[in-house]
Length: 327
Image (cartoon, rainbow, N blue to C red; front, side, top):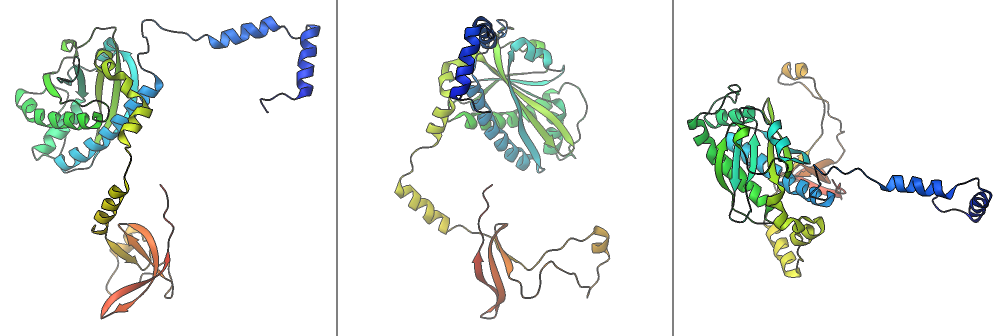
């Protein structure tokens, strides 16, 4: 239904008002009810939706960066993804933490106050076990020893460095570890009723799954809160590119090495059939003898080509350029 009234509908509405069929006071009361929203003064919203969206973008970049770092560090696939960004009171945050926990209090000269990073013990012990050459099996729900904390302290510093790099477009800071605690009751970096932004990250390492929480008190964020505008962030992170920069980039790309492979055909086989293959067996592909082959560049289908030879080497002659799919 259109939001614009026709002339006939306007005439009927005016006639209903004049005859008393429609009460204008009731319409005003309904509009007033719609415009009134409940507000909890115990939990005031410190940050707008736009600012929270910027928080999401920053920590999505952080999650990707930490995934790459930890995967190389523990030599196993590590997945880190953003789970949620919420505004809660600091008391609610501390009450939600289990005891014992692995809690890092960090600060910086460029930050007003302290922030908190909490990692689930199952993730903590899995990373520790893999670093020490083990299979990556959590040891249970117990407080870390001084030796374990000393080993993991370096890893936490590196993780916090990646966090600072994710924030550098908004506010640059160099993180320092103030203290490491296992009991949430001893972590008092903000008043109980102060609003905080709680960033929750989902982490998986092999069969181990858990969460990592980053608590940003509003007193830490407010000094540079105006920079959290998504518009300002995109402006800062997207400077104008000159023609000289484009030419330099094009020249650099020309020297890049790309993997090119020719795909003669593909098929699907059951594992049992593959295990019974012998020398001389024939596998039927999904292409015919005269069909062009697919040329893949870095794993992407880019060209169609005809196979052959050139100066005594196998070769492929390009006959068609495939359209690039936009992801």
